[in-house]
Image (cartoon, rainbow, N blue to C red):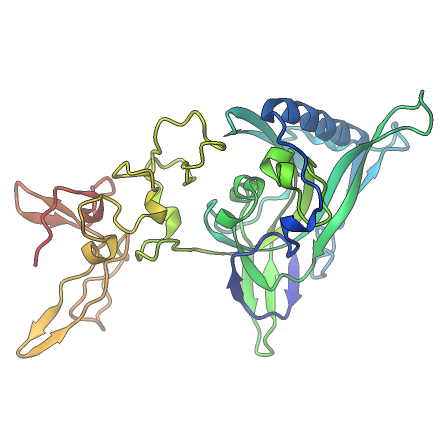
Length: 369
C-alpha cells in the first residue's frame, strides 16, 4: 500500500496553476499559426521522450513516493527512454490521445505511473494534486556542428497542495489528462492528519496550445511546451452555475467531458455544443435555465412542499439520481426519487428511468404552481 500523509486545510480556489500574472511578461510575441506551432512543439516533445530516461521513486508511506526524475540518456545500452514505454501493457505506460482544439488535432502524450483506485475527475471538477512543472526548449549545441538538445527548466513545484484546482479554470491540458487518472483512498486521524493511499500519478507532456501558448505566464516563455509530473489525491465535484446539479452530471452526450465552445478561436469548426440543451450557446453546466423555458433549473428541480394543517414544510431539491434506499428518518421525502421526467400521456412522473428526459431539460413541461 502506498501512502502519503500531511496536514492541510481544505479550501477551494479557482486559481491559475501559479500566481504569476501573464502581464508579468514585458513582451508578448505576435500570434503564430496554431498548426505550424504545434508541428514545432510535437517535434520537441517527441525528441524529449526519445532522448530522456525517467527514474520513479517507490517509497510507500513517504512524501517522495512516485516522485520522478527525468534525465538525458547518457548510456543508451543501459537506460530506457520514456518513449520505450509507449503503449506498454504494464506500468509505467506512455499513452497518447487526440485533442481537437484551435481547428487542429493535438497529439497529447501522458505517462501513467499508477492509475489510482477511486473515482476519476471530469474536466470540470476540482482536483487536489501535487505537481512539478517544467517548460521545454531546444538548446543549440556547443558548436555549429553539434546537435541541438531539448532541455527542461523548472518553473514551479507544489509538494503539499492546500487547495482544489478547478480544472475548468486551468490550462486545457490539465482538463484533458486528469480525467484519465483516478484518486486514491484517504483516512483521517485524530491528530488532523490525512493519509492518501494508492493515488493516481503520472506525467503529462503538453504542446503550447494546450498550455499558455502566446501569452506565456510568469517565467514561462511564450510558445513553450510544458511537462507536469503530478499525484492525484482527491477530487471535488463542482456546480459552476449553482443550479444544484454537479457540472459533471450535465454531460448530455455521455462522452465524459463538458465544454464551453463559445470561444471561436478554440472551436472554429464547432457546429453546436452537444451539452447545450436549449442551443443558446451556453452549455448546461454554465446555464441557469438549461431548457430555456423561462424557469430556472433550480426552480424546476425543487421537490413539492408538504402542507400539514397551517404548516408548510420545504422538502428541498431532487438529487440528479435517487438514492438506493429511502431514509426512514425523513417521512416527507422519498430519497429514491431523482429529478423526474413528466409523462403527458399518464400525467405522472418518472423518477428512475436512466434515459428519462428530466423536467429541467424538457421545455414542454408546464411548471405546476
